[in-house]
Image (cartoon, rainbow, N blue to C red; front, side, top):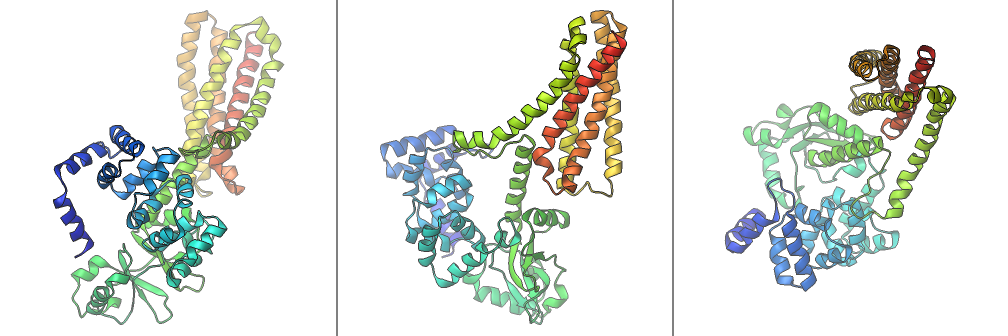
Amino acid sequence: MSRDADDLAELKSRPEADEDLEDLALEEDYALNPDYVREVDDALDRGDAERLRELLNALRSEDIADLMGFLSADDREELLHHLDPEVLAEVLPELDTEIREDLVDLVEPAALARALGEMDSDDAADVVDDLEAGRRAQVLAAMPDIERAAIETALAYEEETAGRLMQREVVAAPQFWTVGQTIDHLRRESDELPELFFDVYVVDPSYHPVGACPVSHLLRSKRDIPLAQIMEPITDIPVDMDQEEVAYIFDKYNLISAPVVEPGGRLVGQITVDDIVGVIAEESEEDILALAGVSDAGRDAGVFGIVKSRLPWLLINTLTAAMAASVIRAFEGEIVKLAVLAVLMPIVASLGGNAGTQTLAVAVRALASRELSAVNAVRTVSREMTVGVLNGTALAAITGTILYFLFRDLRLSIAFGAALVINLFVASLAGALVPLALDRMGRDPAVSSSVFVTFVTDFTGFFAFLGLAALILL
């Protein structure tokens, strides 16, 4: 009986209580229900294995991985003992890296080896990579030679490259095969096929991919048609390409899968869209966190680790803030003479900072998606400068009018409005130029741009407002 048939039979035989548990487990947005998590926690505390089995049967492997993140380390260890090797094989690839690193050390080498044998080669390599050298050797020694060789080959590639991302299991066929021969081969070798594949890659005698036949085309074509007649062009991926570049190619060409080739052009694996979804989410998360100068703390991160990752950027911000504050000190006499300046100058700096952050976010996203380059840099920067001037002018008119009614001082309104226009113009310019400059220097613009843009907007805001006030009011 097939796996789908087994699953269907199991679903039909489940008691009504299990159906209720499925309703309890997930909310409408597919997030875990807090009441369900508490049920699992209570079952673990009581040591009620039967109840725990019922609760886990209501979840998919992805949901069990999510559940792990809501449990304490001790409860995770207890829950781990209730997972069969087949279920463990599906759960481990879905876990947060930090949680997985802790859990794999708790699994017996033989059990972990069996679970790795159930995974795709790319997922198995990710799990093995989390192991310390000694334990890795034990686990690999317990695996069959072919599976062990596939994992060791994957680990030989650099992290975050196509070689690490790909799965080595592919379906390939020679050019001279017909549709019928290909379909017959797939049926005969069904046990050896990848769990998920979308294309049959057509290869030449040197095992170089020359085209691809989507499975949907195979099923619609007559048996006597050669593959060479229905195959489509391919976009092959070099094995050493960075995973962010791979994600860009998948997005640009709307790929579902792509062959991975080594330097000589020989087919060595494939990357499928489910892997790319994870890469896109990971890279986007890294960019968002980098804009704030932090790294992913994770649900189990320690206090000192978080401090270590964030403190350096706070120290840099302290230095830049001190430089901006030096402008205030230079105008100390003017502030003493007219105390209202101390009230208004943070507003100029704050509005400039917000404008700079808006432009910076747009520029970093455009760089990441290859929408901003040397070809259109001048046009993009000019556009942002124009936006800065127009926004500054609009804000200057509104706030200047309000200040006039509050203080009845036209010169103060003019100084404040002019400073706003200057600062928003500079903020927009810095928000576009700083990430461009860092990108040209080979640095990640998402990591440090915000520090420099904040410094520029604070320095310019204080200097422009206090300088104009000194010239116009005093």
